[in-house]
Amino acid sequence: QLQLVESGGGSVQPGGSLRLSCAASGFTLETYAIGWFRQAPGKEREGVACISNSNGITNYADSVKGRFTVSRDNAKNTVYLQMNSLKPEDTAAYYCAAGKSCATIPPLPSFFSSWGQGTQVIVSS
Image 1 (spheres, rainbow, N blue to C red):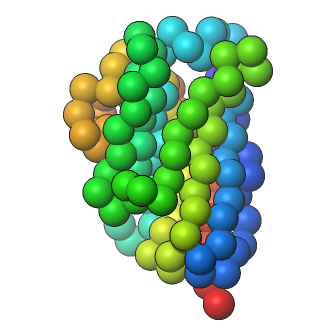
Image 2: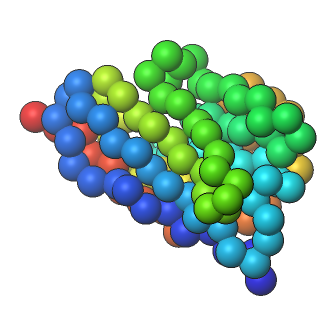
């Protein structure tokens, strides 16, 4: 059974950093595109970053470009989202999801079929 588990969320001050992890079980993560998404209260889920399955190419939403970095450790079957220079508007529940490809920039939730349970990120002074 394909399963994704996010971890690494928490509370941080503006300008701080967090690294989220997305651990996969039941499948080989590198065979799927992995997207990171976030959803703030009262807002729609939005794509943040994506790493492709075929060549590891990454793409980012404009709002996080230059601050967030997505990477993959195949040996650990885990994808990471390094978040630097965090802003209050980055506050949201963050989710990782597996899909066929990073077809859009930023990724669209409808292209991804298997989701983790989410991890909360709070950026506040």
